[in-house]
Image (cartoon, rainbow, N blue to C red; front, side, top):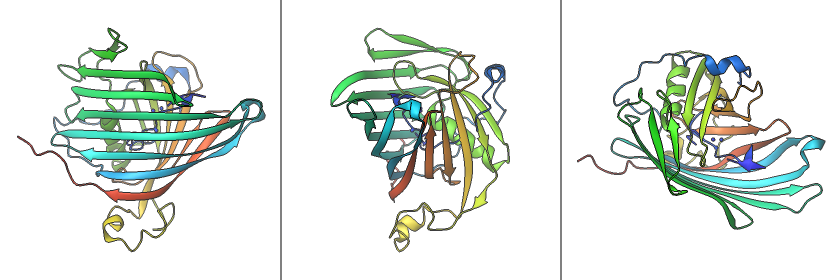
Length: 302
């Protein structure tokens, strides 16, 4: 297994990728895509948020695996807390996966991630920790301050100390990428392609190619937590339509035709993911929404 993208907002093979649960995507898995610029969607200085603050919990299981993968079973869960601040978003994400192998000892993989991102796309802070059987195998703490989104900048790490990474002009932050996907879906645009700074460790720039399907009806209780229908607060979060999305993640600058992994979403227009799958090629994992609650906006503007 390899490290985690949930744009949620949010789930990016790294032993289990950081999953952005506020974003979506079908891979156009050809090397030429790396050179194709992103589809133009007008950017606002302070875009109106489309996603809604919420806390969601997902149960994760192995969907399928080839014999060559060596994986016998996967079980786990993920909790995502997506909060609206004054002029930005904060994300807390924690996942635990228990991975059983055919011919090796099982592994417990934990991913802990928290981040803050401003609406203007200039400021981004994240902390990413990956553990295997309780031992930390990667800890990345970094901060991005850039003059403008259309200017290159340096991502500076507090851990590992002294490490920096070049962030190219136009690279999107995770929630900004999700908001762009939702805007494209609402406008009926089927493809979005961008460089995204995911925050998933010390090498977290990914080229993301997204295919967005047309909005389609979904039964009110399909992939929705059992027993939630009678809760008015939870019911207000539920949509009767979803956008099917498939995102293909490529390492930045890589000319490979096959993505590192793909995320397949059923995403509501308010950014809530009803169900998602992670496809690594040799195996795939499915996640089902088991609980959800709304979150009040935090932090008043000065």
